[in-house]
Image 1 (spheres, rainbow, N blue to C red):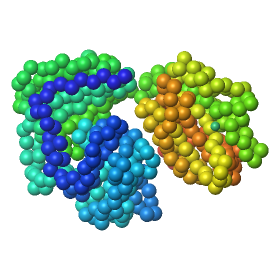
Image 2 (image 1 turned 135 degrees about the vertical axis):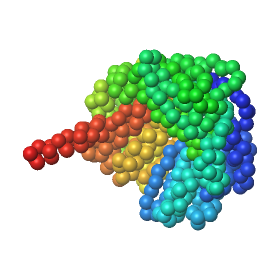
Image 3 (image 1 turned 90 degrees about the vertical axis):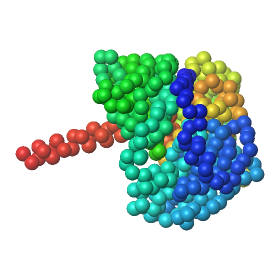
Image 4 (image 1 turned 60 degrees about the vertical axis):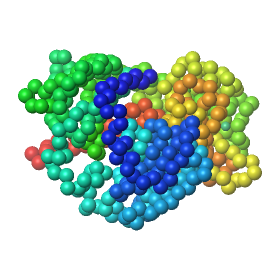
Length: 474
Ligand SMILES: [Zn+2]
């Protein structure tokens, strides 16, 4: 659940919108129910993609040829504009397309001497992808357009505009919006735990303070005058306990600071892991064999891979429940019933695909239906693609029974085509089944925000190495 409260509106139009407004739109689209691209524009070496809703995106940087691929998830282009290509001022080829029904893909293709940076702005409804020739990056604020801005002008006296608090059990985000780029100092204080943020060039507020809603980590926010006698505003964020870490992330324009509070890693992880439950659902079973090719039955492949995932996740202390752990028949309704009564953190149905009419089609398909399952689908899909030599048969949105009727993040993974010779080899060889299990485990851990064990082990050995060297020297 997300608690949200917006307060302290002095100006109703955010400054960033005014700036974006001045860009010439190349295309303007009409409205629709799902998140949809509303306009695409190009300005100041930046591509701006405006959408109706908050954007969730993933980026990958690929080589040979050098390119940036940005996928906007659960988002579509209007039917009339399914593909758009243009050229940037630095000669980059930019394509905006929709490879599947619910995903917008932007590809920047050009020389390796060009840096590309993607970030969200305008309350996460605008994706900006900036390109800069390497060596020209000095001015990281080209979007503000004024290159001759002196340091003084940059931090000219401004006012506080709005403070926004948003949070759930694990994380709270406090966003501070000002009318000018902010110069700030922070102080983490104890007894009681609180974070003070002095906004050095922002005037103390003159109007009465609003009440802010408390979250699990933040008990309140106060706004007043900085203690050092300056004409500066101080924001004090009261924390619920001493075990909270924070990170500060100023926006590119500097007029928004986002402070993210999280429970300290160790405490959070042990608390979290012991309460986690995952359901893996091996598709089919009993008389329902699923696809059957080359002497292999899908139900058995599904079960073997599910058991391997269970083993890997249990190494983390996570409780894993299989909807079936033998060759028995289980209806779809029973699988859903088990899941909805246990309410796991993740539900994954494992399947093998088949195509009766052709043996040449191969690849991974990952299905999701609900919004909360979208990120899980993305992590699983990309993790399989990076762990196995298998083609991308896309992430798709479909109302399969087990992912439509389950109340938790739920996906159905078609790991490959049993009807295709190469895919069948992957699905049935023990070594690549291990790779599938590893890929799915990595994705589940990523979704649950748990650090994979290998990295931890690596860090430990890296830390030990210098000590060993010292001993040798003695
Ligand atoms: Zn199946």
